[in-house]
Length: 390
Ligand code: SOE
Image (cartoon, rainbow, N blue to C red; front, side, top):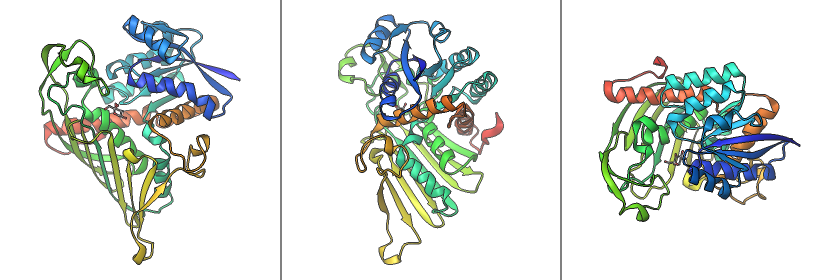
């Protein structure tokens, strides 16, 4: 059994879910290449030390450069804030390490292109962490579309709704700082919708959008409060009020190159919506609906069904014929959020083992960043913008 020695940069939510994937991938996906949790990286020593213990990493490091330049490291998982992605990825590529980077790839398309160029020049495997492509129901949607079951596509309708910022007293965090995150739910959530749209429908030609920050100042507290933080514990600990420099919501219209019309909406202010990522695609012959809150299901309507029984049918993507399912449980036994990261890691390892391109990769990340940037430009120019203007 060959070993793939891994360094993980970041130890919060994404660091945790990628650590979980590292623990489980070899158990469920048999491969000649077995990943090893060598070193986890974070700036704050006592926290990264704790994370190393909790998540079972062999060692920890407070300087990412030291970790990625270690001779024994083969691959780097980048799960730190968006503003750090470019520097780490470029240096990791130059050091010959394979890279799996969280989304959005970079703060801007210009940065993303530099990452792509560096990874291609070094000849390393590069992958972008859009885990929702690894949901069996989404893979099934892709197959149905590719098989022509929807006919010519008319509409893509995507919403990604969360509500964790609804309370104006919810503290600020790096995710609300434009210099660190690039944007708010636009880069955090629309990036996922754009990825699914590019995967299922095709390339985006033009966009026009609007964005708004409803709560312009939020309390700064001594701990970083992001999704999942126990707000009740940090509420009394306010140091000062600081400006929110990202959007609370961004919506946009898109025209795809193949003529499909798209609408997108991402927000953290939709009360009652937790991780409501829903896409609907309508074509000449059929329609599909997927919602991550019921991630094992795909709704399919076919115009070719007898009229008297026509209606959306709920397909459970839990059978051996559906991608990834064979690796998990017997048919009908559902999977969850964390499993998508295991599936993703299995594909990353496979790409390394076979020395082939991963998908989505930094090229996809570059195109995704272009769409994000074009939408942001259009919110200022108040006109249609083309993603390929960077
Ligand atoms: C927070 O909004 C977040 O964790 C995103 O960063 C993830 O990409 C998304 O999958 C769930 O929500």
